[in-house]
Length: 321
Image (tube, rainbow, N blue to C red; front, side):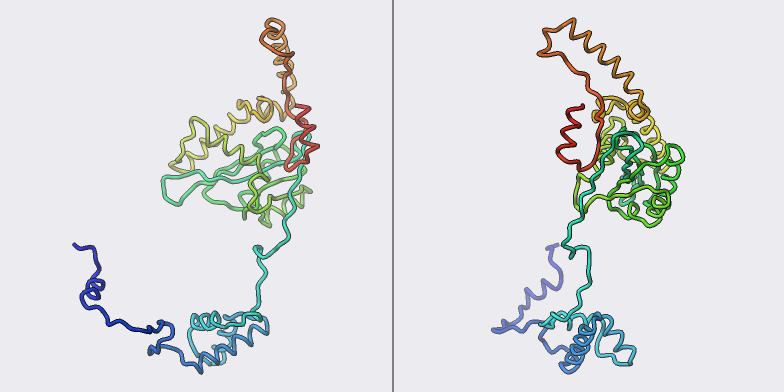
């Protein structure tokens, strides 16, 4: 009724007498406290273990194996944390302690079937914390989706099956690029690509623009007007993604490839469509030159596509487009 716990009400009604110099709880002599002699023995064994390059858990277990129990495992860690000189404590190497930056992946494609990019994105389900996983493999030159699947989880074996099917249908690329997720860096997939002579690259940690083609394709998928947002079950998700992939490859006018479809750029038929476009544009200019400042130019897909290309390559790409 008064929004106070019983203990709070008790201590407010019966306040404790003030103490001029209160003693911290960790320094009080409570009954379960480990004595100073035992703490000193634990400290000595921890320091000896650190000198030998072993951890606190190793020292605790070794003492336990010898039939000596001076305190709980957690107590040993508290004693270790209270040791002032931590210079002999062994430091395990981790990724976060590495100061050497990973080199940026530099990939250059001048045609289809040279570089593939792949990634996995979440498809939301009605259940909290549960999402279906959409796998997608993209040819970065043509933007064509050459492999896909939707599963309940990320799994390196499922990724290998997807790539084997894509290789059988489209052939082998020169390089496969991905981010640094567990499925992307799995040993199973690495062995498959190595056995087939396909190179493999990964983006750098905490760098958002090392895998731009796959990220862009996922954005296109999730910003479609008919994107449901939530998929009731796995079959529904697979059916929708299957229809989306067919539309994307055959009908999507991609702004990154001069508004041609990925299929047209992948098989080279875009050149015929380009001729038709150019004829129509030039005829329109001849009929209405007053609507232009100069004769217009029909854009074509860039002859050079890549990731982290140099300024010179980007300039050549823009000039050609």
